[in-house]
Image (cartoon, rainbow, N blue to C red; front, side, top):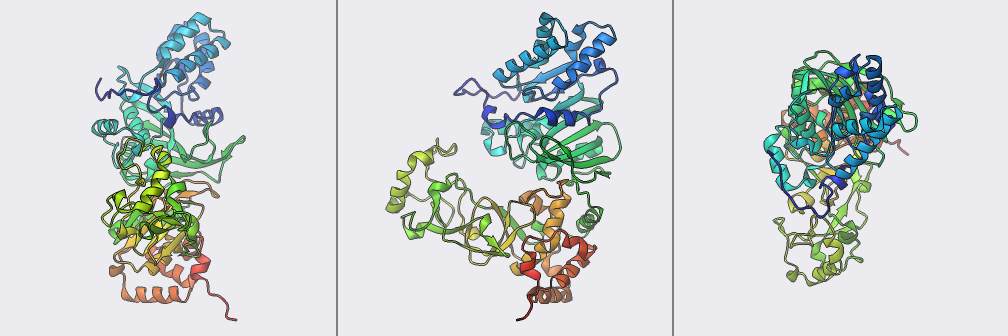
Length: 547
């Protein structure tokens, strides 16, 4: 079959098994299903489940299907073409067939017939390899979330060729969306519970353009503040419903809770024009207006002289991080290390943690023979280091996941904490090596002190919140895609009198004046920006009373 990759596995389970088996809680699935418009006559439906798991998205429909057969005095055999469910894990597929048959039996379907129907519904196949002959009126699923780096390289190449949207380090669920869209009947509905990253990331461009130009995004619900899966997962899921060939607005809301799941705040209605641009999901109309104005007037942050990069991951902090006393190697092989907890009051404070640097000035792995003390230290921990997935088959088992480049770790920069309720930004004027829990921003044009205050004055918070439907008390992801979505002026193009006033206000810690100046650029009220200021805003821009 096209795109099929043959690979010998250590076990009979598929390679995805340990990466993506996060099954949807029944309560969450049933809540999602309420937002899907099913036909009055259930027997006219053709439902596709691309990643069936334990059947949370179609088992609740079985009573209505059986009742439709009885009401219309039809044979139960008419149920066979109604559902098509794919499950790549053979053991999970077998369990699901048994569960389907048992549920049908409970609904008084004869056992033999129940087993036959369940067998016809569940396919133990990879959905991305499937080529069903008929299209579907409804496609509902919680597709697998597997990051780009975790997908075997050979498969990545296949998916990049086959799926237009699978690019720019896309998650596997994006390929599921694209493949499912091709199987949707005119006026059919596609409803997925998946990370909301497609609404804003570069790899979501093709999907956003399809959703806004070929139909209607009827619903987007943020489930980030709900434990949506039976096993805890850091996924920030959103549920969306798309209807092909339809037109109309999008209802946006968010949910919160566990046993009792309820709406957080009020829902809003948005009308999205055909575009590949990131979707503005905020429920704050003033924020939406300010962001739209900025998109018209200013370039994106990376086109305004700034560069963004994630901090460095080691893959084994226990070995690579520690004090100089604990890590007894050549001093030249140690770098001062900081992470999210190092940011206080807008500054980056080093507490003595060092990172083992196994790279030269060009970012190449050094030879251990040149550094005997480091070689001895790393060999003592070889077993632990080789247990890492990326190091198990590598000759350079001692390297950290990410390279350390002097032009980044030794440079002044801003650090932004990855996950937080409010933006957390600090300035590193020394040149520390930042960990993977933060994102780094360098600028060739903006003075860093001015950039720190500018982003802290509600700009970073405004843009990240506007791209999220998140709950009022929820946490946000301040990752590269979100930071890069900021539209801001280039420093050289700002009026000289504005820059002079801004610098004076910053140095005097006159927060009110700073907010007014920034609000002037974004054509909004200073009070709006004040709702989105960084966590350490008071330390940066509040005058302290004189003693």
